[in-house]
Length: 316
Length: 268
Image (tube, rainbow over all chains, first blue to last red; front, side, top):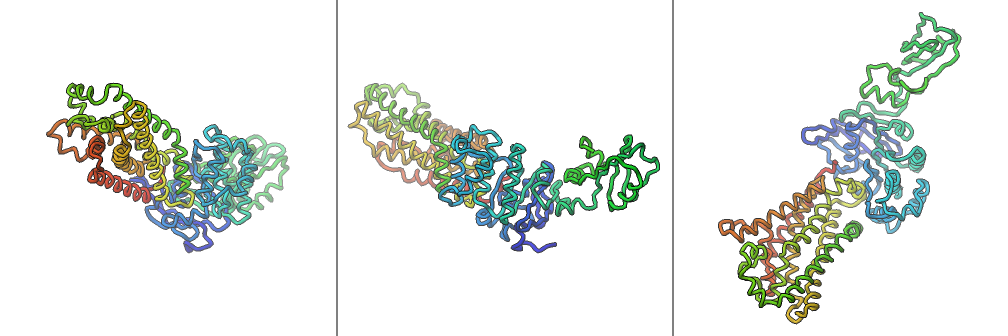
């Protein structure tokens, strides 16, 4: 176990438990997020992601365990911690009575700023929120526009730690890319990001370390590459003519035969598989990168099924 | 804290305008009607026909008024007047936390480096400022009404300012209870409903205690027991004991609200 509340750990949770009445939402969660990391918290609805985020942001007091942010107690020292964080909650409810600009000024004033930081205009420009749009009442905003305003308030003071709960809900694909660019820029200046999502591609695009949570427990954590290591990947091989009936490849198992195409599940060293296949005349060969989605499904209910089932509907 | 206070007041500006304007108009109308009825003489003749239950509503079992000031002040216990004020106070108080938790807006506000207690104090101050404004408008309505109705020489401001000190104390006590309920709640409508229910129950208890002697021991339980605007106006004295009870209740409930809000989870 690593030492907790160390300065290089921006977030550290040690044996965190949280119960709401008889319901145990978190059950012994341990995790650390280092300075400059882009951390993704993955899990289905109700797994405990939001509870974990609210413990980190000081909205919920853990029933047991220790939660530290920047080496400070997440519950007791929540005010000094919040000077250094930007938070994007799951439901981005912004004050409907105000205009976009008024709301952002209000958020800036709550941080003790007399006026909007210069970065606010840059963010509005990048997220395509025009001056005219910001002068309009938020009540008339679409869900996507409200999300953009919420993103701006979380980023405008250039925090050291960005905490985001389902940050891309309501954003169109173009704006998602802009948002990820903004996260990469924040990371480049040394900021740490801590985000939860059930959109796996978001986490895959934005994060370098990941934790998977299920029923209030961390079931796996590490870098995306380390999570991929040792997991079975799918290889689709198309032969010129029928594949040999007696084909057997060390390090792979046959998942499916469909005409000239053989689908293999590869879990060992791929070199042996390639050497074995090189003896045949092939017309196509697809070896897909294992996506977080496969990993996720493996952990959340399809562990016993072959990856080919998981990949149904995807190009082979 | 100033930012939260300003934002809360700005958010309630229309409620403030409508309730304050309504009370101004109502107070003006009462003064005008008093004059149009011919003043105290006709009202004294009419008084004997007023059932006791209705007198109890106005805390006027001993007679309606000895002068114009007392009569106009007794109308500060008019159900319409109290409903408007209480609706305003309860809406602001129950909206301070429970409604914000329900909407999720509190997460964005408290993600900033402000202690929870300061947020709630700012919201309580918004309610205090709003209440002072609507009570001032009500007095202004009475005064303007008296001038318009030609009874300006019988009606002076100081007794009504004292009445409004008492009204303010009552509103703070009710606002404290509503804030306490809101501070632990996750549902704005439920917090409003519970606070309104408690206020209505207290009003009924005070009414019952005044009307039915076997229930008179219940009277002190109600905040309305400590609110008698006609007596304040006629005596020209502030009822210090009643004010102490109401402000004591307000202080206790506000303190409890701050403590509970500081400690609660914001989990919704």
